[in-house]
Length: 213
Ligand SMILES: C[S@@+](CC[C@H](N)C(=O)[O-])C[C@H]1O[C@@H](n2cnc3c(N)ncnc32)[C@H](O)[C@@H]1O
Image 1 (spheres, helix red, strand yellow):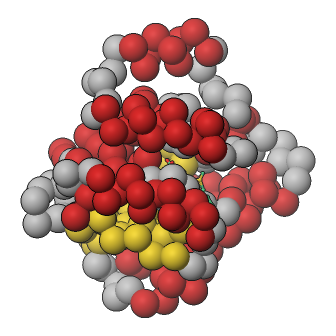
Image 2: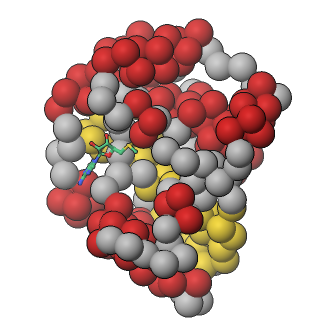
């Protein structure tokens, strides 16, 4: 994955961000050794960003679409209060098993509920306005659908963070269907009067969207 920042600046940012719990360092190492696409993991900078977002927003209920091996779920759950809950959805049972093995070992893992299945179906199970923070990080072709659904699932004043919103810059002139879907979602957000928004040039682009009160 190409980041927006030059690699040495990304490295510098990592080195100047909070260090990770040893279990999360182990998870990163495990993911690089045992999966084909370890670069899907959000990593130290974005992980710390998401954790802080959950903390400073005072979130109690978080939804994540796209668990992979559990890195971002475990980071965000660290920012939740003891009674907080994070629901994370993963379609691939093998990735879900890997995530589960780390969630079970984390002292704060009891806050996380992992659902295995297609998020496009599972999202139907939730009531409107039931989450304080939602992190979208799954199949890019469904981004417009996820956005529209999540604007309804997030509480008024709540936040949606969407990963890969710049997609290595391909959103400028989308060459394929996935890039087109992300660019389409970005236009939907830009024109959406229900939300305040800022597209951050962090890592591969994080679209931060806040539902108006
Ligand atoms: C970029 S990775 C998530 C990375 C994770 N957030 C992290 O920081 O480690 C995207 C994940 O979404 C999952 N996924 C793809 N399509 C999905 C769907 N329709 N429903 C649920 N999960 C899906 C993939 O299997 C993959 O594990």
